[in-house]
Image (cartoon, rainbow, N blue to C red; front, side, top):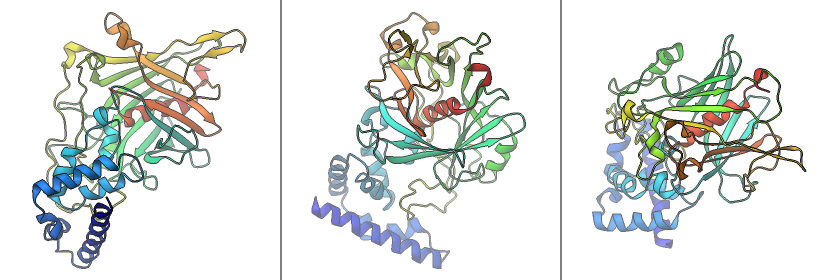
Length: 393
């Protein structure tokens, strides 16, 4: 492993030198320069064996950044690395930025947490690195709250320091109505073939960066969230209802499939933010960025998520849900979502928690999710819980 680590360090230094040279000479493409390196000419069998060992040994963050570094060396390394690294659905790991747009693991909940900054009205999503609630985590996404006269937007980005709608790091947004009782999650790129495109002012701003006319960048509604009005002022947690427009109800069944994005459609997006040498300056049209049409289409119906019913604890005199130690502070924001049985007969799959969210500190919250929703979708749903809901309290 020491030899492999030396190879990785050498790759990083070589790649960074290439970027510096390319900045001085604009006509020299980064990709072409990297292909001239000695690493690009390694025998395929040897290269695959090296990458397999790196991927197997670096299975946690921050060491897993070495896997990302390998994908940034050149095209041949990138292709093999992407073949080796499995999607979160199978590996239960988030490796590349596109992983936040892919469904979570099938077998267990992927543990994350959200930090809130009240002064700047920003929210940061981190991947938990340990079972402890106090670890630093691996940064995944950030969101900024933008108040408007008739609604509120939460702009979601891959970069904590760049959360504008026209940015290449723009992933999507969450928009609420005036009362904060209804929300729509918009994806920055089509979640599946034939996805409905919504025109808006923010769409035009994002389209200034658009390169591929075949994969337009804008607003694609992927989910609708509604909170029940509490007109009687009854005690208890908020009641929410999520309709996942882009996910079929059959996805929760054994063998069910949810649409999976495999590429970002933006040309200049920083696919690997930690490594500046992996930036493409070409105008190549992204192909195969979608896994295909929505499985089952309209005949199958959309996945509907609802609150798992809490139980009233007589001794504690409060509503309780079993978060298995992941939530420590009672709050109306806490929730667990399961698949609604309204799509058909209830089965064991309807008892599985797909998303749970809860408070563990003044500005710290846990977020655990699983297949068929992605980290981006789970984050957006949790953001809706932060919004003020006078009519639902």
